[in-house]
Length: 194
Image 1: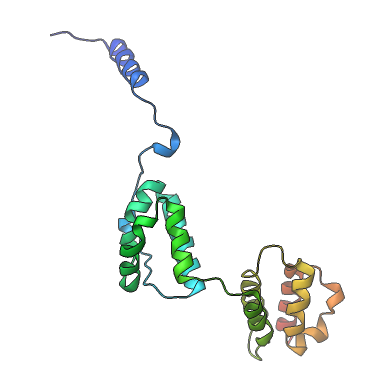
Image 2: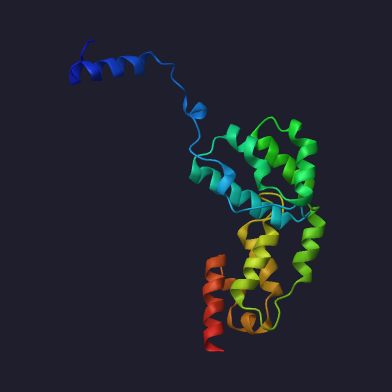
C-alpha cells in the first residue's frame, strides 16, 4: 500500500479539483429549499397579497441560496387551496422561475386600469383619526400601482396634499413642501402639537 505525504495528498486533491468540470455560478447547487419557508399563498385574487407573497418568497430564496431551477421545482410547496389546483394546470407553462412568477401575477393579480387606481386615490380622503404616516403610506402604495414614470414627485405631492385633513393643510403650506419626507416630518410636527 502506498502512502502519501501531506504535501503529496494536497497536490493530488488540487489536481483532481482542477480536472473536475467547473460549474458556473448559476449551475452551482442550491444551499436550500422552500421546505422551511413559512410563507403560503392560497390563491386569492388580490394584487397586494400576490406582491407580498412574491416579495417574501424572493427574499427567502435569496437568503437561502435557492437556485432558480430548485425554486421552480419547489414552488408548489408554498401553495394551498385554489393555488394548488391552479399550479397543477399551469406548471408545464413555467419553463423558468420568472415564468412562474409572471403566471402567478397574470392569474391572481391582474393589473387594474389606471383610471380605477385614480378613482381609488381620489375617493380616499384622510380620515379624521388617521395619522399622517398611515395616510401617506396608503396613498403612495396606490400611486405605485400606476405605470412607472407617470408622475413626478411634485405632482404626487399635489394629489396627496389635496386629500389631507384641513388641520394639516392649515399648518403646512404646499409651496414649502418639496418631498414626501418633508411632508411626513411636518405632518408629524402638527400631530405632536395638536
